[in-house]
Length: 354
Image 1 (cartoon, rainbow, N blue to C red):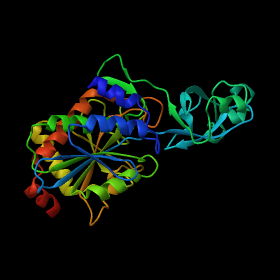
Image 2 (image 1 turned 60 degrees about the horizontal axis):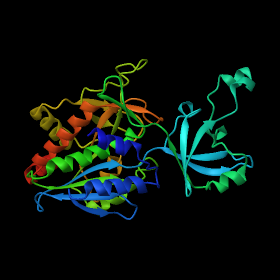
Image 3 (image 1 turned 60 degrees about the vertical axis):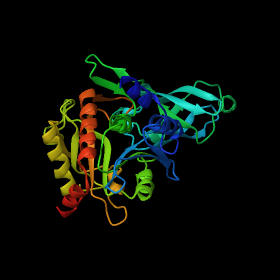
Image 4 (image 1 turned 30 degrees about the vertical axis):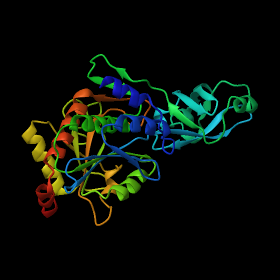
C-alpha cells in the first residue's frame, strides 16, 4: 500500500496534463477490470458482478493543482498560469519542477524581496500575479534552449514522506491521489468476491478546473449510483474551532453533508451510514460552504443520479504538501467494498424511494 501511495502522489498529473497519471491508472486497473476511456481522457474500469444489477460509479480525479508556463521574460524568468485553486500565501519560495520537451528543470517561485518593500507593502499578501519562477538561466534564449516554452506544465515538489508517526503521510496531490488509491485497492479486493452490480472505478480528468472529466465520464457510464472520493478538510490544527470543521485525522472517512456543488441524496447517505455502522467502520461528517467535487456533476447526469461524497480528512490541501492518515484510507476502502457487496436492485429501489 505504501508503494502504491508513493507512486501515485509522486506522479505528475495537472489539469489537462494527466498523461502520466493516466498511464499509471491504466496499468493498475489492467487485469482487475475492463478498461475504457471517455474522450477527455478519464479512465473507466468496469468490474461486472451482476450485469443486470445497479451500475455503481466510484469516481476519483487524477489531476492535481499546479501551474503552466505563460511567458518567458527577456531575463529568463517564467510567468505562470495557476491550474486549480491556489492561495497566494502558500506559494512563495516553494520549489517546483518545469516539465519541458527536453526534460525536467528545477525551479523556485520568487517575488520582489521583502528588504525593498515599503512598510505598507510588507503587510499585504504577495499576489500570484506578481510572482515568477526562477529556473537558473541567464536569459530567454538559454531557457528556450533548455526546452522551455509556453504551455509547459509546472509541478510542485513534495516527495511522499511517512512522518514521525508513520500512519501520518505527507505528500503533494493527496487531492485526489487518495481517491485514486482507494479505487485501485477496492478493485483488487473485489477479485473473486461476489457483488450484485457492476462497479465502475473512474479516474477522472480536470476536476480542479471545473469538474470536467466527471461530466463526460458519467455520461459514458450512465450510473444508477454515484460516489465521489475526494479529500475533506481536517479541523484538527490550531486556530480552527470545532463548529468550523469537525473532522480529524485517523478518526474515519468523512461523509460530506453539503458543498456548493451538491446536497447529497438522503437515501444514499442513510444507506452508506447504515452499512458503516453494521461493519464497524468509523465515520465523520462535515459541511463546506464552498468548493465542490465530481459528485456535483455526476448527480446531474441523465434524469439524475443519487450521489454522495466520501473523503479523507486532510491537512493543508491546495498547497505543496498535505497530510493524511493511513487508517482513513483503509476505512474508506472497507466502506466502498461493503457498499459494492450490498447494493443490489432492492437496495437501489429503497434508496430512490427515500
